[in-house]
Length: 466
Image (cartoon, rainbow, N blue to C red; front, side, top):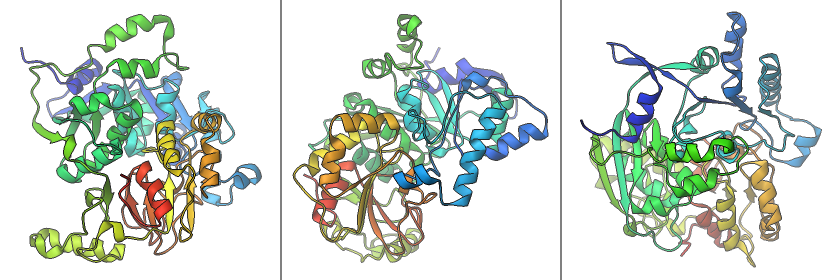
């Protein structure tokens, strides 16, 4: 009998019924909610007079719309739509008896994909869903995690099940030691550049190899978080001692049966004879700090590279490259290190954990942002991260360097709150997407690691952090 991939093991353990048309009904262990994609789902429950099937599996937090400045947190949210959505989530959780709801003043509040792992709501072998594409983050813990649409949010609330089609399997094996100051963010940007933004479509991507094993759990979450940017629905990493150490003692982890749990988790890996539909091999030693130059996450180049020349590409790709260069206000063959930066954003569900803040702060000690930088903000991913950073004095480092120290939330990642780029602003951002106007209408985004963002803030332009 042929062995199973990690994805197949979790899928099989949650399979309720398969159909001849290729669809299958699977059971969902954990459902994460936020204020943007849940209102219509709750309305659907009311309309059909349905209750939530398993209330205890649901955890809700406000993150996308929340202001990150103290003034609005205290005196009220200025944006009407944001205020309505946040108040609706509070009401819906109360009406449907969801008691794990983290409102704006709750000490557990934060970005949904940051708080899930940090409170132990995400566990190995689980199926985890949320009305947010970056739910793939939780795959770092060998959880089958992915984003769903609003109608599916309602379906999970009502039935604790989902109708799905089984994905194909892709293995991305990365071996070798990352160079000094090259991080998980650089690694995943490089992988996306190799795979492309649609190369992972229809696949569950498992990241393996010696390089992955050396990454911290924060680094692994960064990798799985951006698997979606390669077109994949699911990103997965098998369980090891690092994962167990991270989870031990967290609020929702079943510590009473801890020993039984970790024995079970040890089986969450792909068998040696498992068959993958696609296999990609990468040497980590060849990767340098990465910078996105265009309007898709695969439009990436090493920091010592140049903006591509459209003439060097076949006609189908040439137009997209030309349009991206025009939107970004760049020139073909322009050096990356010659690109000046207006604003700096360190945050998002990709890079707002304590490790990310430590890395950035380490570069900012005894330094100050360049006079040409209009604004530099640091937004912790959760209240827990913020508290830990303040205990370590990281907030003082950022403030001394000229950064604003903000409250937790999605912030400038997606311009759904008061943190936005202005028309034409160029931002070195630790977020995950660089689409046109993603961070504000007419804003220009360069995706980088926390270290690269910190270095750019000091230099006033993109620079090799090494």
